[in-house]
Amino acid sequence: MTRGFRLIFVTSLLLSLLGLCRGSTIGVCYGRNADDLPTPDKVAQLVQLHKIKYLRIYDSNIQVLKAFANTGVELIVGISNLDLLPFSQFQSNADTWLRNNILPYYPATKITYITVGAEVTESPNNASAMVVPAMKNILTALRKAGLHKKIKVSTTHSLGILSRSFPPSAGAFNSSHAFFLKPMLEFLAENQSPFMVDIYPYYAYRDSPSNVSLDYALFESSSEVIDPNTGLLYTNMFDAQIDALYFALMALNFRTIKIMVTETGWPSKGSPKEKAATPDNAQTYNTNLIRHVINDTGTPAKPGEELDVYIFSLFNENRKPGLESERNWGLFYPDQTSVYNLDITGQDAARVTTEANVTSSNGTYCIASSTASEIDLQNALDWACGSGNVDCSAIQPSQPCFEPDNVVSHASFAFNSYYQQNGATDIACSFGGTGIKVNKDPSYDNCLYMTTGSNKTAETNATALTSPPSAAASGTFTWPLSCLLMALLSCL
Picture 1 (tube, rainbow, N blue to C red):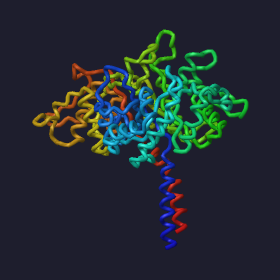
Picture 2 (picture 1 turned 90 degrees about the horizontal axis):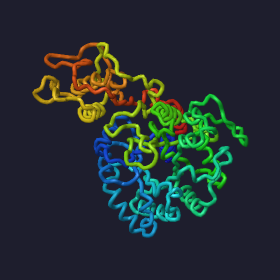
Picture 3 (picture 1 turned 90 degrees about the vertical axis):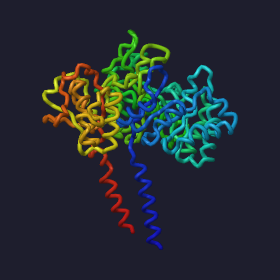
């Protein structure tokens, strides 16, 4: 009996520890304030192809929720500021919304968070008084459905919720929001929900270039900023802003609330005044951000602390008001080609550069890896023949390249066609890690593989496709957990 109890205890403990070892994550915000975006189905395909596992949307659009069913992508869904009043007034409104907008699609669509309102303290009609009552009603609706432990409830903030952010140790919340902050923070602490914040070092640099160096904002600084109160050293503004929030929370005695960055990024284009809004700076910021986050570096005040971060935004959005930069935060153009090369997984961050220009194929071909999973190959094949604009008629029934009728053969033909059409660059043969370059011509019988220049309609705007996490990276926690398992089993 005692041995059985120990086994149950050890198993439970191991499962808990495994849950703690997920590590920091990178997601992307999928805003839709545009009139030229691809359909949600095509977006879901693009997201999977680039190995994006976490996505934030700003509403609960049914077509989007349907599109991401059975993809494994985890979603943050949102309730807009305009809807706060009815949700805060009546529990029945929250119950109905959950029943109609969430329950029909869950768990096929993996919804993990619901944001109730967005940056309410910044909105023209300050709706902050309605946020906590609405959050409580949404949580009650989730509890009735038995989902309150699987879907967390929070709300997002701008950094403007702080009255002071430098030095980080002096971080303090704006006292004018005290009536809203205290019950909101109590809700987060009680329900183990994160404090969600949108952080933009770009704006700090743009608005005060004489006080903030560009390198410091881009994670490129070789010098350090010292917090005079703690002696902590900061090499980038992102960490300093995160720590200012941690210190502000600690000042109010909320020490257990975790921070989640629900928006950050850098624009690739701006008005003449916005000289820092360039593709190079956007690529530098996001590449360094991803590397910083997935390494579980933490911050000077919270070394090793896990931090989930969402990059804004998936697409350029042409209907956003304001300066030119507001419409140019996207990683992709609406035609699904990359604005600049970026590996969301972070595994190729060291080798992804802007040097992926159109070059000669030098007698190389791109084919499908025989070790890739059939699902990944099929996703990549569907993308190549669809959004990738590859002519896949040759792999249709009765056509020269249809046989052998398997996904590896069909994907190889499509991969090579895309590769050759897009300059035969390394990035054009990535296909999420499922494509490999070879020197031998894969042509056979009457099935002829394209070479550079053989297709008059070849496109030259390669879409950067990311590689999957390496085996070494995925095994980061293997040896500590193995040792832990042996130690725990020795107790049996």
